[in-house]
Image 1 (tube, rainbow, N blue to C red):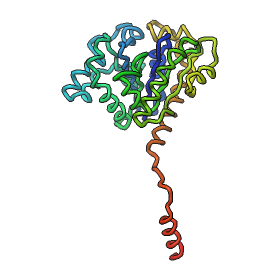
Image 2: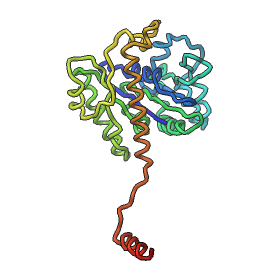
Image 3: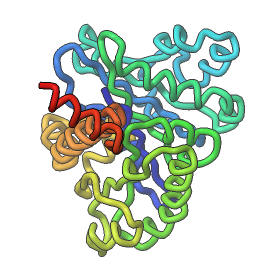
Image 4: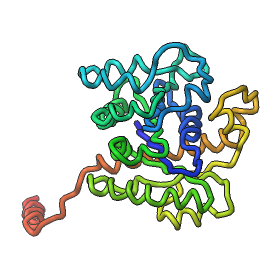
Amino acid sequence: MAVIAFAGASGGPGVTATALAALLTWPLPEGRRAILAECDPDGGSIAAGYLESRVLGDYGLHNLEVAHRRHQLDQEFWQQLIVLSENDAIADRLLLPGLSNPAQAAGLSQTWQRLGVLFEQLQNQEPGHDVIVDLGRSGATGTASALARSADIVAVVVRCTLRSASAAKPRVDALRAALEVHGRDSGRLGLVVIEDGPFRQRDIAEQLQLPVFATLPHDPKAAQVLSHGGDGGRSFGRSPLLRDARAMSERLRSLAVQEQQRLHAPVLRPQTVLDRMKGAVNGAAR
């Protein structure tokens, strides 16, 4: 019951690798499934990177443009997913591959918002789905930002460097403003800090005026597997990056659940003088 969007900026923050690590470590109570949707307008990289183009066939986000125009997006969506589970029979970790050509993003300008609605609906289907959205470096702005606005939690991935923080600042400001303009609480916006650079995570949080949702270690060996593929060996699942990614996933899912509970909590109307008078009369009658 969560929709989590990851976003970044220039400076090599590792948004896609972070989103993929989240999918591979996402907590899945019995019967639930997780979907990673590569929605970076600049194009997807998991098929050619982590999967090393081992998947045959034409799958991915670009096929949903025509489906949306034909009012068949909800049905076609399931035909575009690739199973990333260790056990294909379970199929509880799924990938929607991203665009193979950035030029394809122009045709999706009317599709992003409908995708956001679909992701929200998937939370409550049986079996329920958690959706992880990779917005890449540019998806948090422009028409694709509809996916950030509809997410329960938006996590901006940033490194502990001045370059990374400076590049993230205008994106964070734009995201915060977009959420507030559309009546969404900017408190759902926070950071995933990769501990690579001379600054402390506290310094980065102060610079961007956002809370730190989670931290990940600088683990080039495991990150290489996530971004370029290859055999990580038995140690890959026990690597510092995957270990801390499990804690990150638990934290983000918990924050998303809290956000949903906050949104659906009944609004208590302030008690008026008439309410107090009615209460006094009822008390006297008893």
